[in-house]
Length: 213
Ligand code: FE2
Image (cartoon, rainbow, N blue to C red; front, side, top):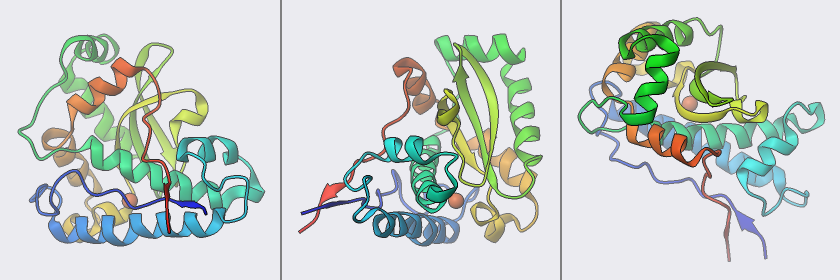
């Protein structure tokens, strides 16, 4: 008997993030793109040492290994998308509080400066990638990764992410990536999720594989 990864349910309805992210985008992005990464990963790990292992372990063990690139890419994309859905919330726009607010203020001067800097950094990613807020040596930092790459293979703890692949915004914004980024940063970020990640101080655990019969 073996275990398989299952596509996690969205933490909200497909129409909950509109108009910033439409139901059509969420339907394709979660139901097709994210699902394909999960399905492909399940097929790739059959009869390997990674069968039944946690997603974070698979990612860490395969990062930077050319002969494991397919497993890394699909595992990391499965993890990144689960983390992205949780980085967003349809609740009223919120702001960081407490320790997280203090760290952002200390690192960027103000919350507004941070938002502008994150938007600029994310917009500058060439091609596909991810924009992150991370903790690195007890300081909050902006990070950018290419394609499927994750910050935690470099020792950084992710607090929030934004998907900067075209499939995340093209149906709603076409080539206007900066408009998508600004709207997400202003209206959808889940600062409670970020604070919980900061408090735990460890890499978020995506759902583990489950028994299938
Ligand atoms: Fe995506």
